[in-house]
Image 1 (tube, rainbow, N blue to C red):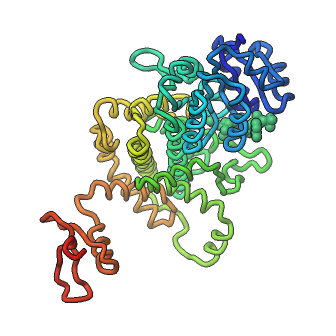
Image 2: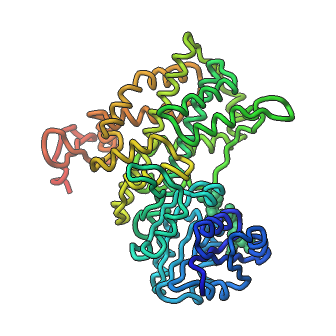
Length: 481
Ligand code: NDP
């Protein structure tokens, strides 16, 4: 065979990725379960000079050895079916890359399965949507370091590029073994959910203070020139500026207020719960989408409940807008801190050697959460081994500066009845993790009362229990068992 890379799956993502490889000078083979799609892609893009095969065996034969194959099919059963069809056709040393949105535990299972056949499996998280796939996505590959030697350069070539101190840097780096890449992609999406929730809350507050959608669009465009500079802020301004052709109203006012989701945000929160990592701001974003898509709940509650109507009393509009900007920035930092902490804990648990600074670096372009803030985050993680992003000097001082504005916004929103589950949860996390002592002491006392769950003391070693049902004296718990 003469093709350097093969792509399976000729829907929008796979065909764009194949064109991206071809644009970078790689001879590219393409295959799709349904031949008509492969045929159409080859016909529509003669410049790519694809080697198109109708038969999977022919496709495999068209590749140089060791073969490099990227699967870009429907995640889940589609990926398993494709892998099962490939295994008997491949030879030891061949490398299979799954670029779909796989759940990382599936990736771990698949990696183990292919390893048993002496095949290499790379679970590569890919972010950037269809444009990214064609023009340069952010790529998060996990798998054996050996397999990265074979496909790393190609993936780096087709990835997004960002200007760094050492010139152009690819938004693709080796993440870690087995499911590490898909785990990091999952957390990327969790942070994306939180980012979008915060943006929604900021817009609600601006609206509550009397700004029209077009005025809010101007505010977001302005914010995009500073610390908040990011893809999501940029497109928020575009969406808010859009006028509906049919009604003449702002488009945002005619879109049904029910947000969909495809599962990666939920996975992030489930994994945070499994690992015992507090990621409440991300969870609030997932729950807010769930609430938005619960019409029965909302209908019943709207009919029964009263409260302020979301109008925010503002004396100085410019000052309030600046407060909201700072609350948005601070909350965003918290979501990144929670997501990166989740990655750190998971790495320990699953045995991945993940360089968090490198993760932040490859998120700087190509992906949905690309943001100026990631430069600072990458530098801070590179400078020292951080337990949490929040301890990084420039981050801590930024949060200290934003503190008064952040608190004013949460207080104002609460008094005005503007729902801000993201902002308030992020602020509570800030206060919770910095507190020298928390209410968990009382919780532990209650647990000891009703369940003899024992407690430790601040002033001496050991485990203790108070005899609540008797004379309420304290006993050394070890002695009672
Ligand atoms: P789809 O998720 O719509 O999947 C369609 C493709 O999967 C077709 O090529 C289809 O073949 C193939 N397929 C489905 N079931 C099977 C099966 N049982 N056996 C073999 N092939 C099957 O395509 P997309 O291009 O939208 O997405 C591809 C992957 O990329 C998905 O995992 C998706 O989650 C991910 N994705 C990532 C995005 C990102 O921004 N990173 C954005 C969108 C998707 P056929 O033509 O024969 O039906």
